[in-house]
Amino acid sequence: MPLPTTLTEESRTGGHTAAGADPARAIAAALRSTLGPNGLDKMVIDRSGTVVVTNTGATVLDAVEIDAPIGRVIRDAIQTHARHVGDGTTTTALLVGELLDAADELVAEGLHPTSVADGYVRAADRAQDTLRELSVPIGPDDARVRAAASTAVTGRWDAAATERFADLSVGALRSVGFDAARVTLHAYPGGGLADSERVEGILVDTDESSTTVDGFGTEGRRALAEPTIALVDGEVALPVDGAAGAVAVQNPGDLATVRDHERAVGRDLIRSITEREVDVLVCQQSIDDDLRTELARAGVLPVERTRRDEFDAIARAAGATAVTAPADLDRDALGSVGAVRRRSVGGGAVLTLTDLPGESHESLLLRGGTPHVAAETKRIVADCLAVARHAARGGVVPGAGAPMMAVSNAVSDHATSVDDRSALALDAFADAVTVIPRTLARNAGADPIDALAALRARHHDGEATAGIDRSGAVRDAFDAGIVEPVAVPARCLETAVRTARLVLRVDQTLDAEAGGSRSAGTEHHGHGDGHRHGDGDVHGRGDGRTHGHGHDRGGYPWALSH
Image (cartoon, one colour):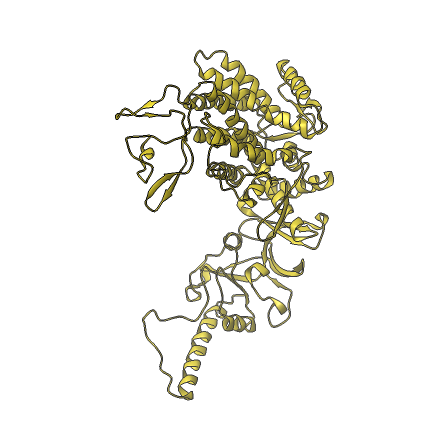
């Protein structure tokens, strides 16, 4: 990977943002080729030898090691964006890199870093207004919801797979009213994408929960019709006296007495479950081995170590109330479902709970030929779900770089009405956001200069929905079915500006030590006429040394107050 792993100092003097621009450039360069429908994949190999093949920016950054502090700040911002939006991570990385690169040049020309940051904020406000004007509100049943999901993953697989991803994701969301909490994903190797399916119910992976379901009870059943379900939000084990103490065993008879007592306690616990006619006991933590065996013998299916999201979903879907211990069970706490079935998938066993009376739930059972393919399939569908949900709730804008070109023109026009030096930052912002259509054109094999000029001309003619299509040509993105939720470019710009502003306001990296602090890198310069302190020393003389208040660099963290 071309990502630097030891960037902690300025790579060149005289530039306030150099220490931030270099890691940002490196991250942007590493992800640039992954953008768009023609984006290429990255193969990331960590120190343990694990291989990850993906073109998702957040996944790439999560897999590589970045030692540069500013690089880690940028990575964290991008990953936070990915968790909230699900798409646009590479776009955000490219925007951060371009904004910091442009800021570096402005500061070198004499503009103060805070003026650049303030200009970026003003530009971002105008950009958000432009995106709102460009957006089109749609409903959950609108065909453009599916188009947005398809656009988000175009290029990450073939055309048929892209359509399959969109169908699975949007179909699942529509069946649960676009409530993401009622959709769960499970990926298994050993099959193709065509073998993936929607399960109208809750799927529990018994390999993850370490549940033994061989024989499905003593009668060898593979399904339970209308079972009664109890949920225990804790572990099921023999009670332990909280008081400190010990049991002295003097002879074999005493040991037999202790064992008889434990068996009696265990029988009472099992009876507290069976007397309530429980068919399935779902436990969020572990079940004692002996108790699990006795439960199976008594005809109760034990399900332990259930994933928290699945446990909560079962409680809502079955109309059950979780208790902390089996002794707390009563009829009001129990629930039921239409059926519980056992099936084999990918060499393992799963349980499916269907015909749910409480609330509907969808489980997407995804297949891939290898564990790596299955994992990537799960990441792609997760992105589809997030994008479709945002599109249905917040509206859509044309994709293919059209929003960024519209933003560029709007901010550039706004800069003409600004009569102070921050207008330079607005112009720089307007140029920086065109990195998205430029990169789309380059990755499509087109000349980025010609493509950008043609795109800008179309926008000046009032065609605000024009973008760069998969072939590198300029066309109407809506007509081509290339759409994205307005939340994606809006959040990309917000995250990029916030991150760039944070980096611009950092003038030094400090590495704390046991005895205090030491400078981990040289000072950032470019403050114009300097910064004079009360003792007559001047901070920012350009000689690469740290100055201030007569103190040496031995540990007094004076810079923390500036």
